[in-house]
Length: 385
Ligand code: UD1
Ligand code: UDP
View 1 (spheres, rainbow, N blue to C red):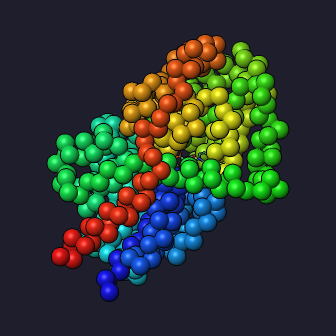
View 2: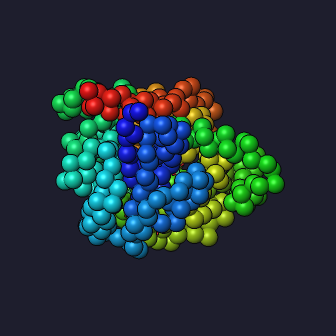
View 3: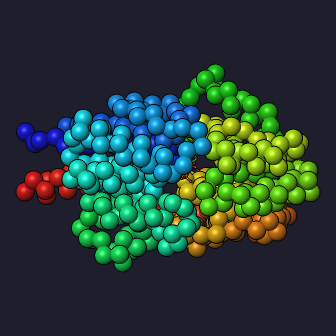
């Protein structure tokens, strides 16, 4: 009888929950090999609850650490203390972290102090600019220093890890688990009887109309707080007033540094609809109905190609350059006039629009979670030899 591997999966925010959900499901299918514990730091509260609900995940531990308008240091210190207790309680053979959040970095860091192995899902993304995204670029670089297994989503990510001197044997090219998540989500929605449709979708159906182009917007990055968020909002306002045949739908992130200026500038405009963050089900529905997407989200840049939606990226740097190179997303920065110009181009020029429709998703094929589980089995077999 082979000794089972004790895995702790740790997450704290909406995107980590979405991207680790399919990994959790795959681990659960492999009960003969793995013993799973799930820990939420609760770095996010409502926005993570929506994910846990949709993917039917049952955390064994919830540290419930979020406070309103938390600073990076405040949430960091709570995670360090909280995760030390979790490791003492669970003593896993390996902990899986995802991406580049405070939860991901500090879970890896505390695991390192406890000499616990770390597997990093979505390893090797880089902008090489320590201030953008802030603080995520440094978080993920530091996780790469600590991790034993690096699950790289793309060839480019693998290349970045190799260039930094990461041991090649520890790098596994998997694709991004977000593609597994979106395919799982679409399948769940397709199988749902009409009568169980979510209330949010019923509400959105009243707004989304075939004779108006829907533009979906999300924005939340820390490096854009202040002037840059205002610039983007001004660009949306100008475009909304010029084009009466569009609806801009914007589920606003709960961070008060985002929601305050967004509501101040865009509240009360007829063809701009501001929402609370949407659950994954209505958000997928809305992405699918949108004409194009304006976002600074990492996950949305990776999901949009599966739904064949052009993306305007309102950031100065992106680590998701694969879709930019394919021409299916555009890196615009946060300059007001440039955003207006590019929105107009997509709205007025059909051939420019068609050029941006994805012909493939460069970020994954829906099998990343399977590859991650396979790699863990092989790694522990090797370790045991
Ligand atoms: C975090 C991640 C970021 C990720 C983003 C996803 C870090 C440093 N940043 O940023 O990489 O892209 O999550 O959304 O880890 N809030 C709520 N309810 C929620 C969630 C947030 O009220 O469910 C509010 C709270 O006031 C909270 C604030 O948002 O203090 C900021 O949350 P935090 O997790 O610190 O940062 P994000 O900007 O969400
Ligand atoms: N998302 C969601 N509801 C929303 C906005 C986004 O479910 O109202 C999902 C989206 O589909 C993607 C993820 O949240 O999978 C991205 O999270 P976010 O933009 O907060 O973080 P990032 O990916 O930038 O780290």
